[in-house]
Image (cartoon, rainbow, N blue to C red; front, side, top):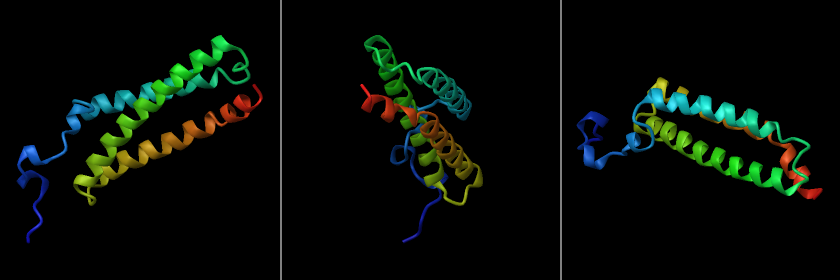
Length: 116
């Protein structure tokens, strides 16, 4: 059985990554938004001990993780189409690096939640 190249596969049998982001440029804009959300959430460090701040933080935290899922899926699907595509592999690496950075930046959360 011959393995088809992406362009040889009928569109209805492929991932519709454009449902996540219409273009790669839109995906790149989402990366900027993720960095902005990271900065916003870091500003809550030391402030999660009251209900208002905790609620606001948790809402933004959930928004951040929803966007991470979309950005990550887009990059993963793009790289899975052709694992030899270095550009798509770079996109995947970008998301993974950003996610590690966000996790490190927000490492204070568990400690603060345990102190409530």
